Image (cartoon, rainbow, N blue to C red; front, side):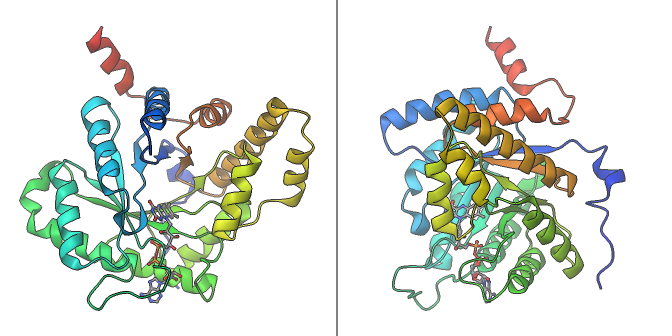
Length: 316
Ligand code: FAD
């Protein structure tokens, strides 16, 4: 049995602000970029702690991902958390990309494996698991440590409230999470889940196993049935059948949206009650649903002057 951790105890969590972050993906066309930037401006006004930028498996969108990270740093007050996938990449290729991110001023990396290549073949010497990438990032960081007096590299990892599709068991997933923590992970963001008990159970099992890092629930606004079904097919995570029925029988889009926001708020509130230290919203590059959810939640956020407001006042 591992020593108790203070991180989830109500007495400490109650006084801590709830962390807030969003996931964005690099746009695939000029039109998508325009919509994304309208979304970014709306999200910026909520003063999140960071926004994460996804990265294609095998680096398929390397350039657009880095462009988005650059623009976020240069043109907004937002701090980027750059996702990076590693499976099949060589240590040389991946250290080059990590150095590229650090050169650009990035100080947060979400270290991921990414999807296995279709034929399952990983070349000899290539990285296999997220854990390999964490260790590589820490080695690169060590070589450049003189630069990090004003902020070290924060490494996040993926965590799974329900079994990872390739994993033999939920117990194995927790062992992997513990191994990622030992290799240097600072926090984890969860895969989408549809039942707060799944998050609560992960938190309980992980803490018992000795995982002490924050486990931030990844919450998807449940306003689009099409998206819920697509994601559930991809991740193997099933939504609540009664909720899906209610969404199907919604009289119009507005009714479906109201039901979706209500269900998301309930999921987020129950996760916070279970000890979640924050919320990471999967925005799908749209702001409206996320903002509706946030308005209803009214999270305790840091009482600092909003960076966005400060930025606006310096521009006017
Ligand atoms: P790992 O932790 O390496 O685990 C992968 C599998 O290997 C698991 O089954 C695990 O049990 C097993 N395993 C791990 N280490 C070991 C070991 N040492 N020995 C034996 N078995 C082991 N994908 C993208 O392509 N781009 C993204 O931007 C992206 N962002 C994501 C963000 C979040 C918050 C989450 C939750 C997922 C994201 N993904 C992304 C999906 C992710 O790449 C997949 O879920 C992938 O299948 C596993 O990634 P991982 O980092 O959890 O891998």
